Length: 263
Image (cartoon, rainbow, N blue to C red; front, side, top):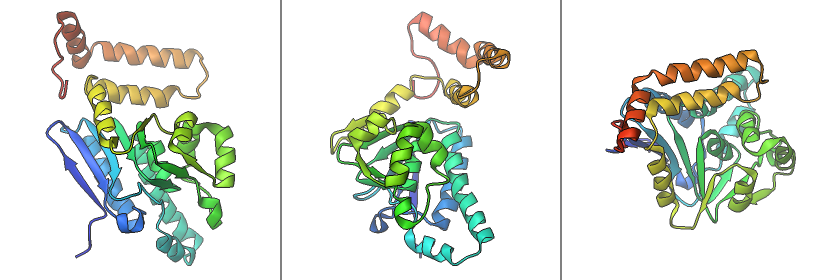
């Protein structure tokens, strides 16, 4: 029986813990993992029990990106076959990026290539102090194509022009300065740091957080014109009359916790 590539567990507080379980290959991913993980994330996105999703990994390293044995096999296929395969990986990254639930990446050890992409696709990323990051594709004669939109959104075009081309390794502290990760945790405290983030997330309304995430995508890099101003006004007008907003405001004024899960 094939060992599972990842584990999924939803705890009593509504956190879905998704753990990569291929430490023997540094949690590299192949076509099977990509398909299964995409399906699981889609399910978590619509599961009413889930308040947040945490992506983490077993072993010394977060993820080495693409499995090189898989890459070698794909190199012998046609361009059309490679396009189909690449679309699946692109679909995984987009699914994670657009998941309608808060997502948190906990990164230890090394994150290479697509592993950096996974961290960039999560809403919040926390790294252990000894973690490191490498956009290593050019060393293999490849390019970080499907992860590029998310990594560039995180670190900016200028930094991408360096690290996409040099494939230099950068530290957790450098990743924090670049904007790829939000916090650096002392070794041994990564999961505790993640739980602190979750504690903050649980203070927000679930539907408001989903709407806030949609808002970010809707306004980013758009000109501030009449259409954008009208769109933002319509969004807050809809939110104000929602059941969740009425409960949140009432709870604040009454100095009590709101009734949504995890509050």
